[in-house]
Length: 220
Image (cartoon, rainbow, N blue to C red; front, side, top):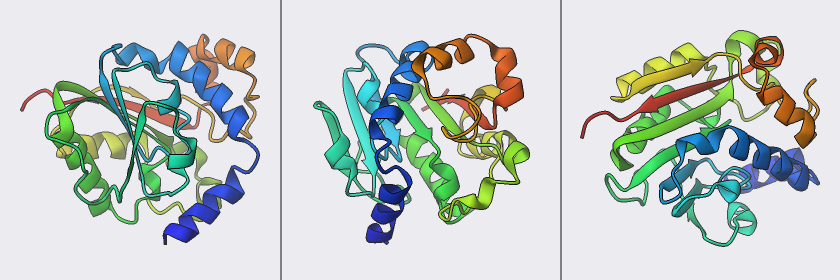
């Protein structure tokens, strides 16, 4: 399965690493960094090619992924955890401030695996810690949701929020429509145009097909 995962991502993202990194640099600086303090410990769940975690300013950065290519793309200072996310994570209890995940949860083979990941996120987060979950919203992209061979779970902002509550989280913010479905969609991957897009929430409601759910661990 590791080899299949490696081949899928190499084929899908071949020669697009620089473009994706430029897009995520803007996304982090203009949007996601607001949840992350400079001395925070951040874990990127399903880090892939590390386009999020490489651009984050934080005291300690973890990239958790089973894909062997993750290590190759991790920036200096990012600790790669080559690990199956559905099993107990090699991270201490209450040692992380922010868990971030993007376009990963829908790749899990079952809802039991999804809940296992969320329980692990809850375990490693400190009280008051934040989970940021970004992913395709099946309510708005059902016609193309299954175009990716490795999509297993049909998820929406509502179902992810409910799963987070089952895992003990307090859901603080839900944006049903945030980013377009893929970088090949109507939103050009130009950093300049992306900055403009992020500054106009009305555009999200027109083009957005990915949800963003923000949740917090409110008790030990």
